[in-house]
Image: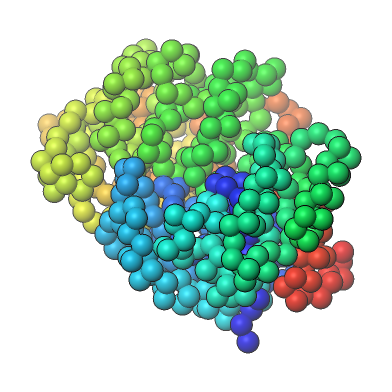
Length: 507
């Protein structure tokens, strides 16, 4: 018997669908329901790697973790990784299949059988599947190529929760307008509204809630307040816009350790920095201009889907020169994946993997390494130990490391540079590089800073002293915090009833 499907759709992009699905996965896990997340098609450069080396959206991996299960490619069978305004790398069932151009509806429809197969696999293995839509639930211009929103709901005959972000304004018009754009069979599946990110007195919202229910016949099943300092992986870099709203705010009295992160246009896997931001006393700032760099205790160059293009933009903005200047003055710099490639002396793309064939550009020159891009993508889990024993890394030398790799290219020591110490010793061989004084380091492993012992040892070596009464970052506790918050403001009993589950005995 196939498991029921609960569909979570949004009135717009970044309405909070991914986080709500994460919360629901943890809530149903707490209630002893074997639950799995599903997103037919994801468009994001924030990705993760499954145990068998498949590539899926980072949000689906996070939702799986909240559900207490291992992520699989069935949870995100189609992943689009933007490479430009109109072109994305197409990843199907975890493997690169080529490029997909905007408006290629025929190609998208050809993937429908893959989507259905993945969903039915999950329905055969779990007691409940929570399916997430993408962007707005209804986009008339995209309806012909829809394989992720209402087409999925209709196929599974899934009850739909329609989520709106009230913090952005116009929430009730968004709800009413979204329903108006639906066909009758689609509207019949919408069984509840969720008003997300509310700030203020709930009593003041009651007249509007009553009005939207009277107009539509759809009940409001929850008004979820804004949850500050949420520390779960997000779907894409849209969330960084909110972080940037506070970019120029002064350090609070407890945040005495300053980390500056270069914000690339094509940033990938930006949640690599989330554990740093969650550490008591640490402030992570996303910077795009040299005047924003300041005098941080650590500079990080994160991953990117287009290293050469983002390196060019870094130079054009003047931020590249400012980073090199700080590094030469003694500020530690860490490069992750594409950021590691930028730290080197040269970058070559002989076959046109991400730039015109034959492209060669100088790197920042902070590490004596050279990167050569290749068409074949490396996607694998990573496990090993920290090898470096110089400078701030000495405190973490020998500690265990786990993470994952997603990259196109190989980075080797610059010819004639002599012996170069690797940053990591992985099961598959050495990875990364570190300068002789340990101040400049880089590697290909995403999730490096998610290793608690390594992260805290590095911070301590750089002079960070956490407030004695502040709790340390804990991913499982963060899932539970999110679940408790949503459970307190969402009618979970009615949600259970929508998918045919009996009332929870522990409720």
